[in-house]
Image (cartoon, rainbow, N blue to C red):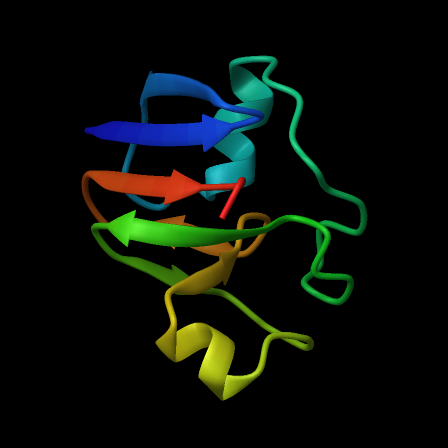
Length: 89
């Protein structure tokens, strides 16, 4: 599967597996991204899903409106197939 990322106006196409979080893939590929807590409480790692599906393990900070608008916490967003996300939203 492929995780497409836009961050700081740079586009990446990264190999990923079902069940990995977005942040795990970024870290494995040594790509710097905004992040802090890794437990879903700070929203520093928030990104917007452009295509594909991701479910959050837990979420203490995003509102229902943000989630409906396509936002996900990358530290909690589990990849469920090919996915494209934008950190520059």
